[in-house]
Every structure is written in C-alpha cells, then in structure tokens.
Length: 122
Image (tube, rainbow, N blue to C red; front, side):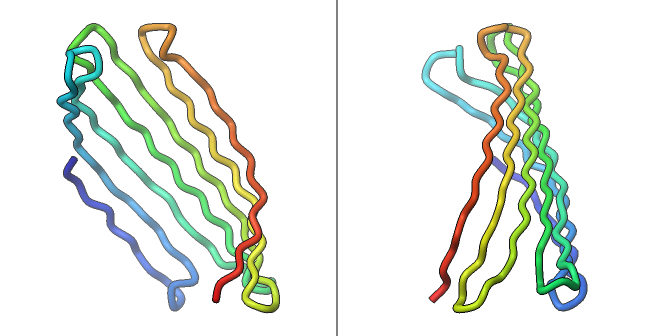
C-alpha cells in the first residue's frame, strides 16, 4: 500500500480537515483474493464552543478489482461525538457504517455499528 494523507489544522488543532488517497495491491495466495485497489478518504473534526465537545466525520471509498471477475466498492462512514468530562474522562458516541457492493452477491454487505465509550486518560 502506498499513498498520502494530508491534514489541515485550524484553531490550535481544534478543527481539522483530512484528505487522502491510497493505492493497494493484495497479492494473496490463490487468485480469488488478489486485487488492485484505490481508496480515497476525506474527513474533518470540529470542536464546538460548548464545553469542548468535538464532532468528527470520516468517509472512505475503496474500489477493488480482483484478478477473478469480482469487483467491489466499499464505502465507510464514521461519525463520533465526544464530550470531555472532569477527572480526565471523555464520553463518546460513535457510528460506523460499512457498505460493500460487489458484482458477486455473497460479498454484498451492510454493517452498522453503534458504540458508547467512556475513556479515562492518565
């Protein structure tokens, strides 16, 4: 895999914009899982004026052309809201959506993951 990600930082790192591209080549044993892929990504983070609450969203799209007749397009959405709390605690709620479209039906899937996370930083 080779690529780049660039992050634009604003407001003393309170606000971020991310953009990137990756090329990947999977040379797996057996041709069924070998592919050439292209991934684009974009995202951002915004810190609100209300107690340092942060909002983050990332999007990725990954095009894979396998050495067999299979072609996949996978889209990934990530949304996070986090609120700093006293005593070095942070409460976060996350959503991850992973949607794969393939010309072979068995590889089509949609996955939604919701998480509530309490983090302590020491």
